[in-house]
Image 1 (cartoon, rainbow, N blue to C red):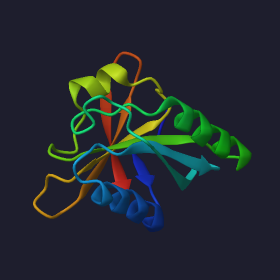
Image 2 (cartoon, rainbow, N blue to C red):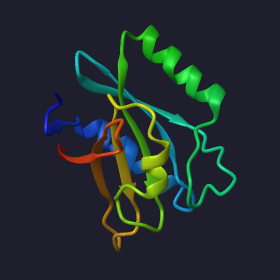
Image 3 (cartoon, helix red, strand yellow):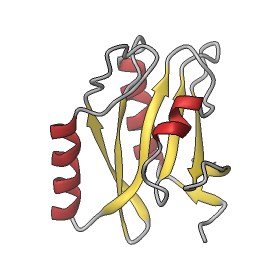
Image 4 (cartoon, rainbow, N blue to C red):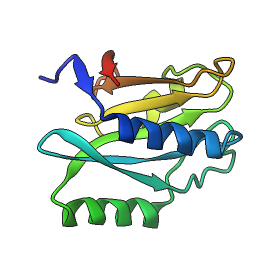
Length: 137
């Protein structure tokens, strides 16, 4: 059973939002590692999707390297993040279809909210049911 409220440190939130703003025309993506259940590091991974403006696919070697760095730091996978440059911070049908880590939190950052960045978190179980998680930022 997972918490319905999750605290994400402000420094990590700022990193994620700044990363999304740096690449406003593509879906950024990557992983978040945690130590003792507390999110601590952001691991950006290149989006290798053929249409990165509306899809994300983590570059496999970089994803493996991010997981290796997490292990070396004694971290576990906490979250998978990506942005929606022109859509709300909601799970798309493709996000649901491609979700492969039921223990990870899925963070979506939207750049589509008239100058206000929005980040929302979701849990996706194996049956593709979702639950929105309250993020305490």
